[in-house]
Image (tube, rainbow, N blue to C red):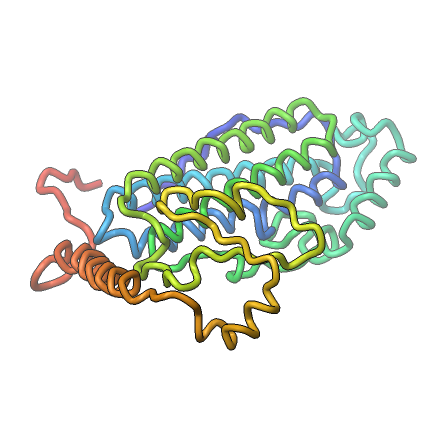
Length: 315
């Protein structure tokens, strides 16, 4: 159940109209790394987490709700940046706040031109109001959402989502000199960092959480890293211990030769029977564990999503 409170989470303010930046800010309203995408991603992921991980369901719903509040902040800021631009702009009276801020007809025409050239669809089709489109007028798309039904996979997706969103806010801050707008963007950017750390802690609290999903890696192919470009740089990503796995990388200097000699890695040297048996055993164990997480948490009889307290006060 959602209850809308009309006071914004952060006191968004704008010192003067800026339709060009309003258009850029649409990226965080209806863009692939924006607040709507984040809200819908976490909201969607929460459903699959409800039974096996009710605590993570609570976290995902809380963060999704906050993302909706951030969407409202972004939308409100866009609307304020368009102050005086919407409606019958060319008939606006000289004494309007917009005209005072823009100092006369020449500036007024300049702002109209900026609004039109930044994204013609923005002032013409939508009337200047924020809609689920990005800064190029491309409609928001559900393919922006990553929800895979495995919480460890989803949480890793969320770490990437928060990282990208933070980066977009950093870039946006370069294109405005309005101190109030920068304050708002700084707040929103910082909340991305907070959410990142929340998702990181949630992932760490699920053990085991590697490898992602259920099945273990095939030991026949796990350790090989390939020299696939001239002058490949060596580092901890292709030499030494594979972090946390008790195995070491095997650097294949000549991948083409290896593929030919092993007939496409179907006839590998060495005997992996012991490792394969251990992997099969682990797969069965993890399958049972993951399945039991859900089955044991599901109530018998009639399914009911919410538990209503007897002391609930009716409105």
